[in-house]
Amino acid sequence: MKKGIVQYGIVSLLLISVLSCKNKEKEAADMKIAALQTYIDSLEDVKTADAETNWDKISSDFDRKTKESNEAVAKLGDDIKAKNQARVDSINTRYGVIKSSVELAKAPKKINPNQKLRNLLFGVDKIGDDMNFGWVNKDNILDTYQKLFDSYKANKGSFSREDYDEVKLIYEALDSRKNTVEKEGLSSSDNMKIASIKFKFAPMFKVNRIGAKARENEEAKE
Image (cartoon, rainbow, N blue to C red; front, side, top):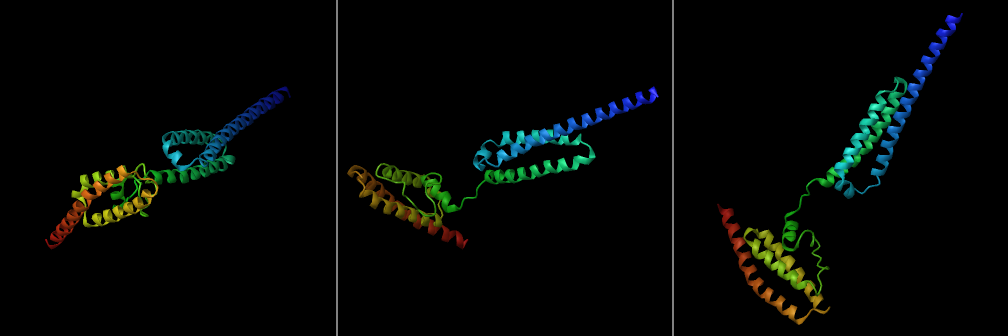
């Protein structure tokens, strides 16, 4: 009788030990998955541009938390393993969406030839398709004309006929803005300097544009 009681006690202790171990493993898995869940929740509130800047750390942290979650799930019993693995997989799917957005943002942007030309003449994204020179005022219009002229001289040898057509449109749009700026207090000194730049630019542009057309016509015949 005593032997049976002892054996029953041992079995009970073993069962309690096993159950306790399973509970600890479940608690550990719940804790790891909850941490991963909180992390993905916070990531979804981060702007793509900010995520892109810190992506190396973000991806490293997420990979570490995912690994810890998977290891914890692997220790669970078959009765609850699949359910908890599904939780981790669901979080990874959400992470994949964020990762795709960041990779798209990091991908090199294709710039059309006209925008490349405008960037070359005035700086990146200063002028877009709308030819809006609203940022030009009495204090910076002289510098804007000078930058246009200097950039044009430095690069005119590589311009195509289409580039010259675009330069013409840009130049006319800047001149239109100048008419407005003159009424907003453009100094006589700056106005005269701008006139000097325009005096040098106009004949140079005319000759170069004709030369580009002639060159392309000759190349077309070959």
